[in-house]
Length: 225
Image (cartoon, rainbow, N blue to C red):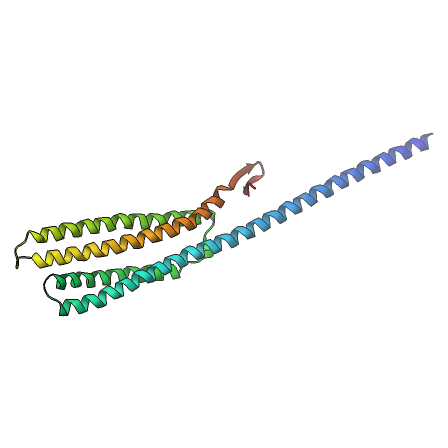
């Protein structure tokens, strides 16, 4: 009888050990699966962010090439017009040449600066910050463009009140140049803002799917599918 009880106790102990080992195995398997999913999600995030930031940088570089081309065209035609034209047109071309130099300088500095950027260095928050920054830059520039046009209108109207030989041509020529430059830059900044804003929608949408989770063992970010 005692032997039978001992065997029963041993079988019960073995059964409990088996269940314990099985539970441990399941937990280890779940941990491995979670780790695999985390690594996979992290790799996907890295790939997406790299691609997104590369696209943003390339868009900015392309915009600066356009601005630089506009600057070259204004400098070339401005210098020719300044030396061949007379009256109001002479001052119009002269101001355009000055704007050409300014736009070329801005375009070159921005293009070279963007060439040095590493699209892989931005995390989620950094990418969102850069997106907000580039949109704000084009918005602020758009406001300045309107100010240039307003200033040009004022100068042109002021020139109309001047007598010939007392700045009449200069004021009108400079004013017309400011109006033209402001109009082009407003179109330029408006198009670039629209393009960047459209690209940013995808980033913001994915960023909003991220949820910060805090647990006793630490914190992490997970997707809400």
